[in-house]
Structure formats: C-alpha cells, structure tokens
Image 1 (cartoon, one colour):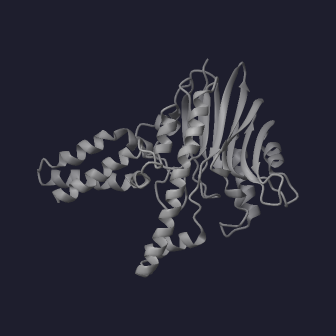
Image 2 (cartoon, rainbow, N blue to C red):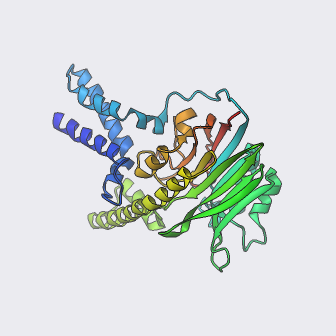
Image 3 (cartoon, rainbow, N blue to C red):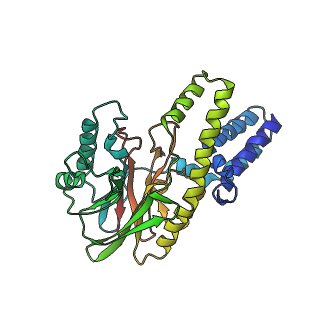
Length: 360
C-alpha cells in the first residue's frame, strides 16, 4: 500500500507540473493535468486510510495535497458565498458556447425549440455584455440571429467575427453583444487554425474603457465514433483490438489539440499584457484549470470562479464530470461580485454569468 500510495503521490505531483511544462515540449504531461481530480481523490483516500491505521504515512499524501491547495479551488470552491459588496459601478457579463444553436439537432429535439430556449435564456439573464462561442449566424434560414438577439435582449452594439463568412460553407465563429458602446474591434488570428481565434472589443462604460476578449481555443474534435467508443468502454462491450484502435485515435486527437492550444494561448496572453485598458477575458478554453493554458492567463488575470464561485465549477455537460472549460477572467482593477453557472443543457456547455464591479 505504501508503494501504491507513492505512485499516486507522484501522479498528483505530475499534474502540478502540467501547469508549467508546455505540451509542445512534453505532451504526455497534459494528460496528468486532465486526470488531476482522479489523482486528488486517490490521495485523499490514502490520507484517511493511513489515519485509520494510526500510521504516519498519511503525511505523504497530505503534504502533496497541500502543495497544490490552490488548484483545489479551481475545481471546487468552498469560500464562495454568494454576492459580495461592490466598490463601484457593476456590469453583468455572460459567456456561452451555444453549439451552433443546435443546428444539427444534437439534442434530438427541434433545433428551433432549442434555439428559442437559448434566446430566452439570454433575454432572462439580461447581461450588459454577452460573449458567444460557436456562434451560427443563421445564414440559410432567412434570418440573422444577431438581429434576433439584439432586438429581443436590448443590445445596441455588437461585433460578430465569422469563419466562412464570404463562402458557401457554414458561417460561424464568435460574437460579442453589448449594451454599452463598442469603440474599437480587432480580430486576433491564430497561425495554426482558421476556425479558432479571438476577438477584441473596447467597450466604453461611462468615462472608462474596458477591453473585452472573447476566444475559442482548439477543440479535440471528437467525432460520433469517439463518443460511441467511450460509451462502449463504459459498458465493457469493446474487444481488445477495438480498445487499442479507439484509444490511439482519441489520444492522438487530444495530443494535437494540446499542442495547438499552446501558441494560441500565448498569442492571447501577449495581447493581454499590451492592453492599455482593464481586461475581461472570456471564452471556451477547451482545457481544464490544471493546464498550461490556464496558467498562462492566470499569470495575468483573476479567475472569477476562484474569486466568487461556489461548489463545483463544471461547465461542460457531457463525457466527463467536473469538467470546467469555460472561463471569465479580469484585471486587478475589477472585482468579482457574483459568479454563477446556469444548469441548462441547451448546448454541450453551461452558460456562465458574472457580475463585475468596476473601479470608482
């Protein structure tokens, strides 16, 4: 048991290292970051196990857990206790990966019903700034969804950046809607992807200007066959050869995505450093809080969930429990008043809504 305990101590330590080692240099380390909750649970078990036998070995896991205590709060936050006092004007911000408004009927329901449910949720929350990822423009349906959202929810200003905008292919991308004037926009392209990018909007709020960044980093691009394989593994119905083939395909896709996200997040982090205004960075990282990507932004900005969230921070509705992929970060000049995750599965992501207090 001591040997097994030491193995899980080493695995937990390797997950901490994933914050600092780029997947471009050593991609397998990224998988230990993904498995952080599992390694943490095993080490908690060993703490209780050795205490039950009155053995000092419990210190092995306890010390290792305490070394990474800050990471626990990125998954489960004990301290968040609802709305906090603000020290200036407050704005409400939402991030939501809308999964093309269920264009391909993934929910096995009417895509129109799902789309209208998303529009209704956006209207109900009535945020000042709304950032959407995997935004579909509505082309081919005789409608512009940006018009629908703006009219229904009272957004006077918007910035929409689409991939395939001028081609026959599906026009989709990112969108920022604002009730405050957008005075400047910019697209931040990623050299290794045409589909993934970041958009920047300078928003004028009273006499202040806030830079809002909305981004979508490289996804794993799981296909239907990958999800089927995971389900088969869960039900133990896959033969050994099938397990080997399916596992190799999934690991390969995850490896490629981890490596691509490195240069993407470094591009965004550099843009954040050069901002002349306070920054609100929003988006779908496609990565967990124990990752190299998360650390690059945490070095510059504050995670609203860590500051004011409560309970589990899960934002992805499928595949793995406790998976947090969607974030809102902000500069030191701002303060998180409230952070909430809306438990509505209209997409494969839950929307995240945050209230931020601006400088007086």
